[in-house]
Length: 158
Image (tube, rainbow, N blue to C red; front, side, top):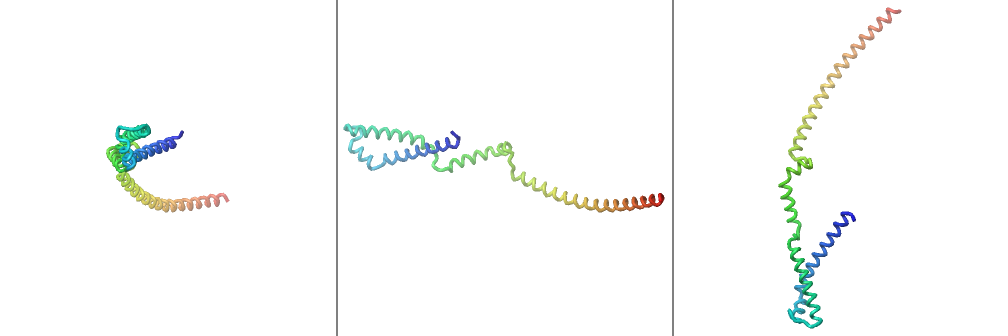
């Protein structure tokens, strides 16, 4: 059985228990149960009434057990959310370190470093273009000189 299907079964079982609890509350507070209690009396019963009274007592006992267990379960998620937020506030530094999360301060530092690097890259690019221009001029002069030397050697040989 997969974990998801097990979780779904547990959720359904919990929902059934909660529904039974509220059903028991309604049955106990319904006008029919008051009439039945008045008709048969609290402790006295005929043969049919005894069976019904015994069943009512069992149902009432189960309802009380459920009431004790369900009483501590919060109806809304606000309490649960508040507990999670308190936990995260207490353990946030440890969580950031363990999960290697980035904080706002980290992001600001990265942005500053990025802007400095982009300025440096622009400066390096402009310096490289200047160097390339002067280097190209030097190469052209060297090529001219080589041509002259080659032409002189060719003239000497001929």
